[in-house]
Image 1: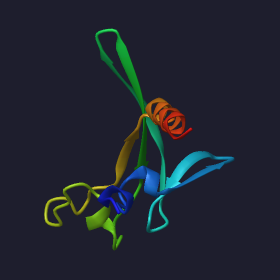
Image 2 (image 1 turned 180 degrees about the vertical axis):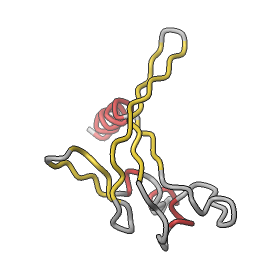
Image 3 (image 1 turned 90 degrees about the vertical axis):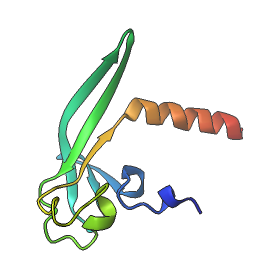
Image 4 (image 1 turned 45 degrees about the horizontal axis):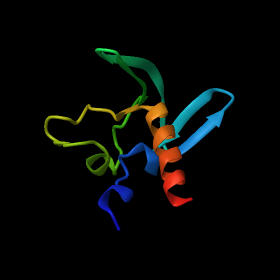
Length: 102
């Protein structure tokens, strides 16, 4: 099995919940990563839109070392999980994958 399929820090390995308060992701420890902002990046005529999700407080999480990228316990003890998701790109990848399989 590929390592990224077992990586608990990746958003596609987290539970996505859509409720009355909006969309959020639930991490391996059960904490909510709520929508913070929308970012846009431009490069000449090309535009990418990212939805940014983050956890309010990751302190005390036993999975923090596996969840955060390049986590150093001494320097990053106050760091919280933040994810940037390009939902349009994911939809295009899913369409392409389904076309390949059909």
